[in-house]
Length: 328
Image (cartoon, rainbow, N blue to C red; front, side, top):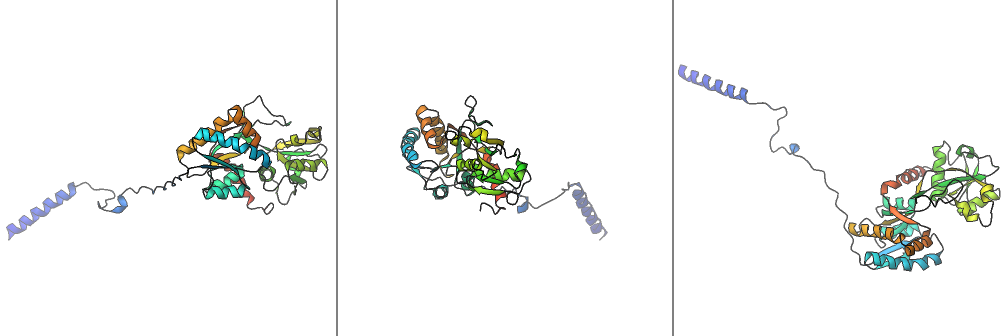
């Protein structure tokens, strides 16, 4: 019996020594515990690439319909040569119709103004490939033809020479003419310029929808308003009829830069085709014949690469505008 007890004591001692010599872990977990496995984030499914036989391109009727109709054929021919595929260039009824057509993939390439591009992109209907380029304009309204082309423009605040308006702050209590409440340069950026300078775009000023940038300037000349916002420099539209327009209607200040018009594609196009479309427009505008065509269509001088992030200021301004009843 004593030998048995002694034997058991020796075994227990051996077990204790082995246990003490085994290294401990800070946070042991069973090998099959699923919480210890690395969980890779789920990948976003790649958009299904749309198969097309004819590339559908649509222009916006922002110019005389006869001009657009005359130029869409030559543009179509040049695109077909560059892309080596059938192309059909048509004219949309309006921006809303074009966005809907791109959303349903009936149109693959669209000419979209900056605010319209943001609306389309945020609905998953458009992806910018190029932005148009133009000559910059100085504060006297002169085109800077000796300087590099630019990818943005500005809205300008104009006032009568005897109005006493020399800054944005002077607009409080004044009547301001604009082309329309849907215009990026005519209302969206101007209203946000007021907000950025501490004025309430709804309560502190009175807006007058003139029906065009030239008409907004005429409202100043006819003393119907105190000031006007137009694209820079819309005074050129009235230069022939009013040779002294720049002395009678004076420049006050600019808004933030507004990216130029875009050429955008639907996101589901094949990436290789997107790249070919981008290069096609850049190369076409660089030729004499192509430059004449894009000049006749929209006064574009050429095209440059652009990214969606370039339009984030417009997104910010549109979001702020949602809180305003004016222009809705």
